[in-house]
Length: 390
Image (cartoon, rainbow, N blue to C red; front, side, top):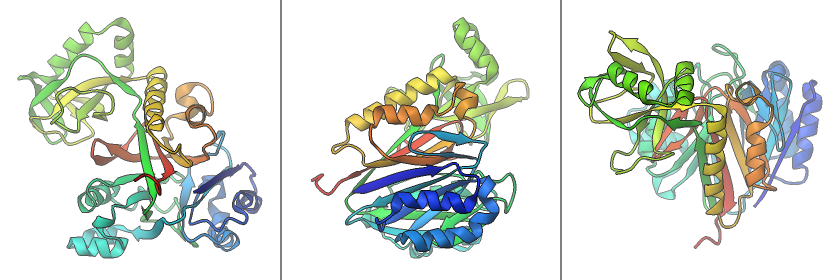
C-alpha cells in the first residue's frame, strides 16, 4: 500500500493544482481525496477535470472546506489545497453519489444497494462527504448503518460555504453543489477510526426517567434542572468554571455496558432550560437512557485524542500507511491557542504516516457500533494493509 499527501498554500488555483499534482506523479492511484479552501471556489470548477486527467486516478472525491489540513500543518482562513492519494492493491473502491431526492424516493433496501453498488456481505468501509445544506446526512448515515451492520463510516460535512449552493463536492471529474459524495472500500485494507469528542464527565451517570423529544424532564425521578444544580454544587472549582462556559450531555450509546468510560458517550450540547425544570439537548432522548454531564476544554481534548490515538495505533499491525483527518472548524487555533494542534498530535503518534484532511462543518465517525455527526470533535481514520492479517 502506497499513500501520499501534499498541500499547497498558493493563492492561485491553477498553480495550487499543479503543486498538489506533483505528489501523485507516476502513481496511478486507486483513490484520491481533494480538499480546497473556499478561496478556490470559482476556479476549481474547471480545474478538477484537469487534475483528474493529469493524475489519472480510478476514483476521486473531495470538497471545499473552511480550512485545509496537510501532512504537517493546518491552514485556517487562508488559501490552501490538499491532495491525498492512495495505491491499494487488491482493494475494490467504488464511488457513489446520493441526493435528497434519492432519500425521499428510495422505498426499499434494494434501491439503496443498487445506488451504492455493493452488497452487505462484502463488509465495506465508507468515506462520505455530504453537502450540509442540501441533504439529510443523518438519515443517510442511519440507513447505511442499517444496510451494512458493523461497517465503518467516516468523513466530514463540506464547510466551504455558509448557505445553499455555496459549497462544492467532487466526484471523479465532476463538481457538484449538492448531495453526498462517497466511496466504499472492500478487500485487504483495515480502516481504523479514532473519534475524539474532547470532553470529560463531571458528576455521575443518571438514568432518564422522563423525557419528551429533545427535552430531559427527570433524572432518577427528580427534575432534571435540580439534578444539574446538584452536580454543579458538588463539582470542584475548576469544573464549575468550565460548566459556566458550557455544559454538554453525554448519552450512553450501548446500554448493555455495566461501566461507562471514554468513548462510550455520544456528546451533545445542552441548549437551555425548558419550563424551569427540563433540559433541552440537540438530540432525541427517551426514558431509560443513561446520561452524564460533561465539560470540554483544550487540555481535555488534547489528552483524550492522544490517549485514543495511542491505543488504536498500538493495536495496528502493520502500522498505519496513511490517514484522513476530519476536524471541527471550531477547533484549530481558536480552541487550542496555537496552530496545527491536531495534525501535530497525530504526527507525534503515527510517525511517517501521510495525513490530509479538512476543517468540517460536522465530523462523521462511530461511537460504539453506530455512526454519528459530531461537533467540536476530531474524526481520524487510519488505513493499513490487511492482506496478511489472517
